[in-house]
Length: 328
Ligand code: PMV
Figure 1 (cartoon, rainbow, N blue to C red):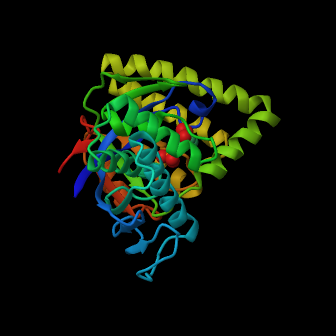
Figure 2: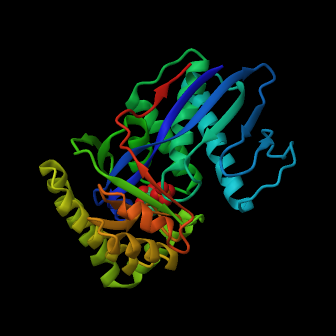
């Protein structure tokens, strides 16, 4: 068996706007997806995912569910998760030239699914890395990130940026603008995450912003304004100015709300964090539900969030300096 892990991420700045060529700065966090891969002789793909908040199920390549589970998230999320694994294995077959290769794939993840923490990118990066190595091929980071991006882009009907997959591959804080992806120096950030227990539909939310942007000038201007915030955010990161980073996160959240991708529970958590004295707080990822990210070196925000109605989980997240890890 070959085993790789890859981290999830939070967006410090720039989600949604990055889809239209503005820069974004995601930052990898120490919450990981671990993917174990073993070659099969019969060419089939068998996926076991015990810990994707899915209660455990097994899927054969033809998509039939084998270990009839109590799936506790929507069917669409389950099939989306399987779509990512399928897509990752297609990339592996393509890059290795082993068109008929079959695999047993086991996924474990401590990243909530579809909640803005990059769970799908982490699974895809770790799956491609482990499955190629299982076939004796070790990909360079650049190729791995590109193959993972192609997978996400395909599953999301072409509506994906390189941000999640690049960040999950390299770790650390990164800057992504179109095809230009690079790592950034970042101070040690006191990241606190609040999770409402739900998930947003990335495809739908991205499509919603696209529509708004084509219909209203304010929305196109808002996307550009997010780009400006990201550029200011890069300076603040380079200066290690956590107060300014927090202030810019607050602005960024306001603009995401204007684009219609926030939700009541995300707003409640963002304001609970601000009231508790966080330097700043914003939703992370596609929005619609899921997670917020706040900056607070004291325990106040985490405590306040854990008592906030609608917040199911509050936790501190270390920045993950290392991206994909080759474990076995
Ligand atoms: O919610 P996530 O982690 O899938 O992030 C989506 C981020 C978007 O900018 C909305 C889309 C993208 O692919 O960049």
